[in-house]
Picture: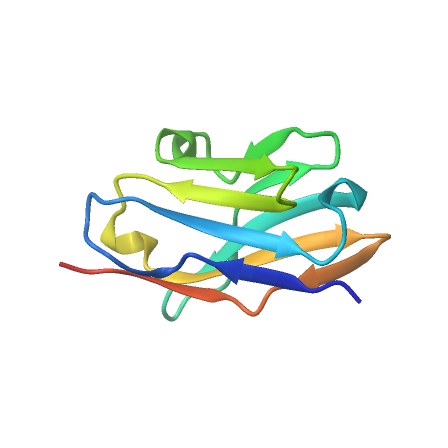
Length: 116
C-alpha cells in the first residue's frame, strides 16, 4: 500500500497564490505517474496536471500553464501544484493520484476555497 499525504490547501483570496504538496510513502521515482485532480462543487473529478515517471509534465489544458505549475523536490520526495492568480472557479477538493506497479492510489483530498 502506498499512502499519499496532501497538504497546503485552505482559504485564499482571488488573485492570490497557493501551493499544494503531495508526499508518497514510496519513492516518487518508482511511480509511473503522479498527478493532481480536482472536484469542484457539484462537479465530477477532473484531471489538472501530472508528472510522468520520465519527468515530463502534462496539463489538462494548455491555458493552465499560465497559472498552474507542477514540480517535484526529489530530496523531499514531494510533488507540488502551484496555483497563481487563483479564481473563484479554482475552488475544489484537490486530490493527489499516483500509479505504482500498475496500481492506482489516491490521497484523501484537500479543500481549496477561493473567496473574498
